[in-house]
Length: 120
Image 1 (cartoon, rainbow, N blue to C red):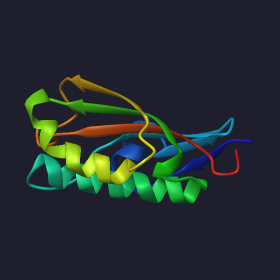
Image 2 (tube, helix red, strand yellow):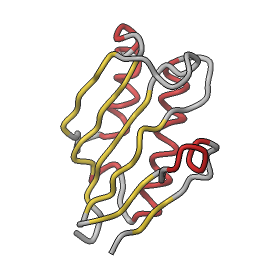
Image 3 (tube, rainbow, N blue to C red):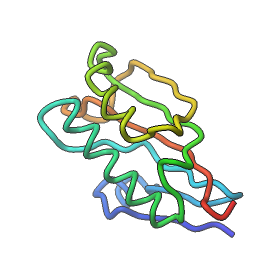
Image 4 (cartoon, rainbow, N blue to C red):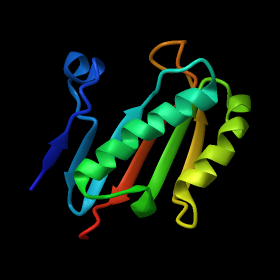
């Protein structure tokens, strides 16, 4: 069974994707950006959107197994570390950070995550 989750974001119907898809015991959360003036503000907002999708999927950050961070400037990643360490706590996932362009220059970070579904 496949469950598709929408966050109601404007890009989801425009581009044709789901915020998250639950399948095979995992929830796959699409790359997520957030609004804000700083990379930390945007990181916090993206994590909030991801957290809502995880909850709807029956999962949480403690079940995360893989996370990918995409930033147009790798030097902006370090200010996010305390927030990420707090979010994942004693259950850090495997992680990758990639420096690349994002869909709009106003975005400073995009986060993609895969987690186990709580019942799995």
